[in-house]
Structure formats: C-alpha cells, structure tokens
Length: 209
Image 1 (cartoon, rainbow, N blue to C red):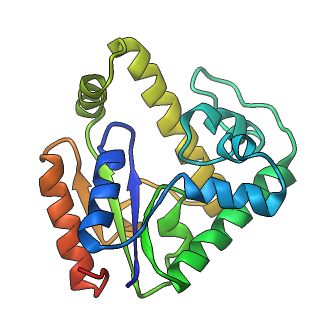
Image 2 (image 1 turned 30 degrees about the vertical axis):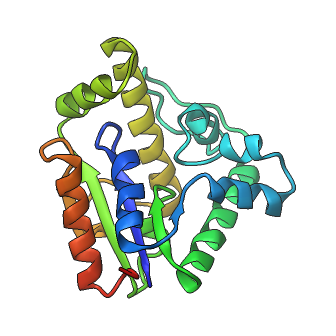
C-alpha cells in the first residue's frame, strides 16, 4: 500500500491535489484526523491540537512562537514559551505518521512528512511549489478575499511552516533533496499534477488501484 507525503507551499494546490491522489490510489487521505488523534493521546480538545498543527493556518504563529527565537515576518524574534508543549505535539504527530505507514498507508498533506518518514522505502515524497507571484494569483482566484489579505497570509504561512521544519528537523522544507518529485503547482492544471503524482506512486508500488 505505502504512503505519499505531499509538502505544499501556500497557493500550490496541495489541498486540491492530496485528496485527489488518495482517491485515485484507493488510499485514505489523512488530514483532519491527524490532529484529532494527537488530541486524544495528549488529552486535550481537538481545537487545541489543531492550533498546534503544522497545516492549520490560524495556529501556525502560536506554535512557532512556542519554539523560541524564530524570525518574525516584520523583523525581530518571537518570544520564548513552553517548548516541551510544542515538542509533545510534534512527537505525537510523528507517531501517528509512523502508524499510518506501518498500517493501511495513505496520503498525508504537510506535517513535515518527508522529514519524519525519510528513511522508509515504501513512501513517495512530493513537493508542490511555484513562484510566489503565481502562487498568490492562484490563491486569490480560489478565495473571495483581497489580494493583499491573501498575500499577508501567504507570507506568514510560508515562513511559519519553514520555521517549524527548520527548528525540529534542521532543514529547508523547500529543498529538492528531500523529495522524489518536485512539481510547480502553479504551472500545470491540478488534474495533470495529480496524474504525475499517481504515476510516480505506482512506480514505487504504492496504492490499491
């Protein structure tokens, strides 16, 4: 069965590609269920786990702030807070990913999956990216908000996710060396991107269909 991890920069169509890949491969799509499982293991409300989840926009800066001296988008550093709390969420997320890989497999969006599962032979790691201006245009097209509001969210989200990976895994999440397949998600139709990922996954023996 195996696992496909998809790391996606803001606006690179990760939310559209990942579930479509899961459906094509006949595998579960693991997204909102991950913070729910983490919440159960830590004995906290699901909302609390979501606020510490790497893929949930509204909680990113709260989580990164707890990691210590991470760069702020407008300069300076973020305050130091309770690092063990952030580490506990990260450790439980890693355990859930390991269990997914050892069990029924699936498609995982975000959660630094390429770093957590980098030594597994039954995993395909995919990165969706693209030039910032095209990612912004794509995100605005999918949204009913102003371009400036979306731009601010894109900058904050990209920086927070990068800070998360750099802090816990000491690497750049955009670096091609972590992935089997890197695709410009702004240059191709979503269905074409899905086709490419599915073809690569099947070439690694991943999927039920």
